[in-house]
Image 1 (cartoon, rainbow, N blue to C red):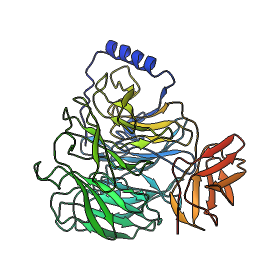
Image 2 (tube, one colour):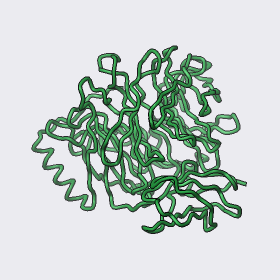
Image 3 (cartoon, one colour):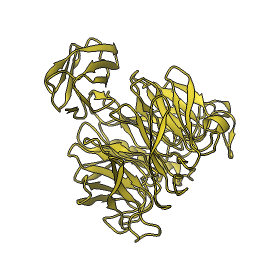
Image 4 (cartoon, one colour):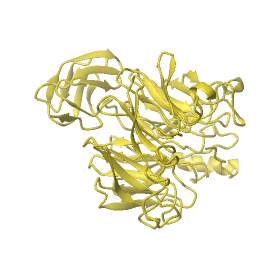
Amino acid sequence: MNKISKCTLALAMVLVSAFITNQSAQAQTFATLYSFCSEKDCKDGGEPYAGLIQGTDGNLYGTTEFGGTGSCSDVDGCGTAFKISLSGALTTLHRFVRSTDGAEPIAGLAQATNGDLYGAASVGGTNNGGTVFKVMPGGGFKVLHTFAGTDGSTPWGTPILGTDGDLFGTTYEGGANGTGGTIFKITPGGTLTTLYSSVSIYWNPFAGLVQASNGDFYGMTQYGGSSACNNGCGTIFKFADDTLTTVYSFAGQEGSPPWPYAPLVQGTTGDFYGMTEADGTDSSGTVFRVNTGGTNFKTLHSFDMGANPTSGLIQATDGNFYGTTNMDGANEAGTIFKITPSGTLTVLYNFCSQEGCTDGGDPNAGLIQDTNGNLYGTTYYGGANNRGVVFSLSIGLGPFVSTQINSGKVGAAVTILGTDLTGASGVAFNGIAASFTVVSASEITTTVPTGATTGFIVVTTPGGTLTSNKVFTVKT
């Protein structure tokens, strides 16, 4: 999973490019919050492949592929799980040991309704097929499942929290045919069920799943589908009622790019948006849009040579989508970009990663929008020690609230995340008031009130009214 940085320009050119970037991004503020490997033997971790999540306590959580303690390949350590405050104070929650814990977690974390964090280690464990684990925000670690091959192996995608409270994920390999991969469900207590095992040796879901507003799961595979590419160019699939259906089959031509690595995101219109690492006009990847039925696919943007995005997109509260490329840009070290739903792309930031630069380079992961309105992410390389960074980017968007699960029946428990929630005086589901408890400045617990209908959640605080970034679906 290691990549060789392509940042080859002279430092003088880097400084000129940084000046141009700052001039064009007037209302933007970029900050490096933490550079990994600042301790002896990199005990704080290094090379974060995955992105971040916002926890109910207001901190950010993530993983590093390497670093920690012990030895994995030629790099010190087998990876870590960490917590970092918005001001940049990092706490290492766990250092992985290959033989027992699993190793090299390139997947991110998901927080369940019990408050624990769940993730996957891509290799290692007692069967050397990777593991599913949980780590507690205050400390503590437990391996929940070790993959043995027939139930899957090499879990690369980040597990997601389903609307039923269980976690859902994919393995890149393993399953009934040994190499095609699986879809699995695991309870917070650790009971794993294989929901789907590939019937083909060429399938391989690299990324994780997304649960759509209709409750069905969608994802992408690296291979399979059309025979236009060797072993197929990849697919978009739907998994519902124990049945897998191919929604769209990539064909390896302009408008149908192959190699889908990153997870999909469902926009406010109901369509899915995603990226591919390769092909397109310059064979450097694309941004695309497709409806849930797969009948309306459109390439929104083809990246110039060298971009190769490996991350997914997010839709921010301004309605635009934001993402990263791990190569190319003014300094050939990756970019942060904005793209409108119709396909107009703007580069917001060019990473540096050369000697003398501390902003990082080669961001493999996507971004998150914290409830304070700012964007946060990681880079795989660069920073003060060239082992990656955690960064923030302010783009002038205001605070909002979000929910752990975006649907539920009347009476269902709902956790609301936000910023400066202390003193909140009201919570309403699409205009219907709900009883609630302020747990902390970053968390409110409530239940779906009688009479509630599908719509936005609004929280009234002393600082103003905060609206949820997504519609909450009230199930019948």
